[in-house]
Length: 264
Length: 248
Image 1 (cartoon, rainbow over the protein chains, first blue to last red):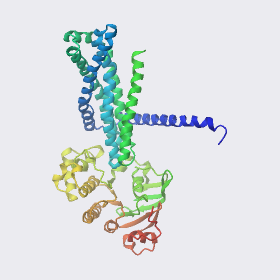
Image 2: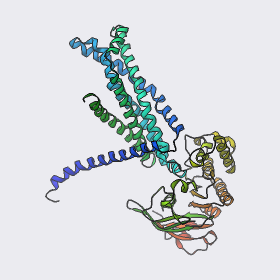
Image 3: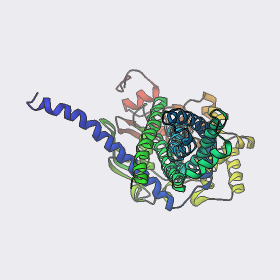
Image 4: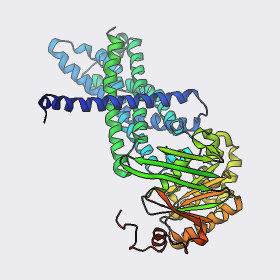
């Protein structure tokens, strides 16, 4: 052991995972560039895009809707009980609306889509890889990035903002239901307050976040599926990595976008 | 003609191909034999560009395959994968007609379906099979669908990766006969990898044995039994004793 080893060993222990993480981010960035570059080069696969749109958008609606309605209801109860400490119970409609459209709608919607969609994409493409279906695509003169990844990434980027908008409306409705039936708010006044305090940028910023989260979810699913290891264990690990990676990236991106949208 | 010259490929410390030299003349059926894990599949994948060799040269009709136009190059090939590699989300006829439904060989849907049904009939499957999904088929039927897909666009070169693995002896015989008939009928160049000796005798014009990352023996199938190479003799007779270690 050299004299500097006690100093360098802990540094190396920190440096190795940092370098590995940077390399991982770099690989994902290169993958993203490759996928997006196919957007401008034919051939295009509209049928695969429409199938992905149905799978990611339409079939995620129940889970996003349920998440939103319960979140809106719980938020109304929390704000009412918390606001009661300084006589601010009347702020429930406006805070529920702003909280839902700016933060909870996009973030929870994104996380639910990550759980449902990133896992299914990674498992599907990972299984295709281990059963040589991706090799078969190549031998059939079909680029797997163009045929498998691009339709899913594009569909998720377009579908998640629509899911977020729907989730926002359902979440506000959840808050309204609890506000009116549990907390004694006047139904019309609640809606009027919601409408008065909400600005268009509150909604639009949430939709931009939704688009970014949709892109991340599908990208992570495709990346981990295409880099899946061998066998059932490899596909399982790829699925887990896709969901964890997508969730962490969604939360990190949410922070960055909030900085950009609301502090400048 | 396919020519491989000093092709090397390693995966980490594992040196799979250590300088493979092989020539497959046009219109000939070459079968590559060798034990499990000797790099037979890697060799096929190197030719197709699915795996990039570390060194060496692979040419098709004298042209370096790495410099060829990828689409035009792949359009000349058909491949039957070991497990069929059928697309689960597509119906059987859509699998068979995959190439005919998109890309440079695109045909109208009705025509593509008709060709697919004709190819299915050619491999002994009824037209009713066309609308099933791959998961609804037996292993033998999946192989036949894979074969129909490989020949759907009438390729000049067909690769068969372990065509009889996992099939019973009768179904193996059926698949072997089909491969032989189709290759002769189409005048295609065929390259098959297998360790099933009944396939070798049914399909091959020529045989090459891959061992330790090198072509150990190559020659006409008729000369295989009389060859003096101890590795080849151990392999074709399935002996536990000999120069090939039984634990690899």
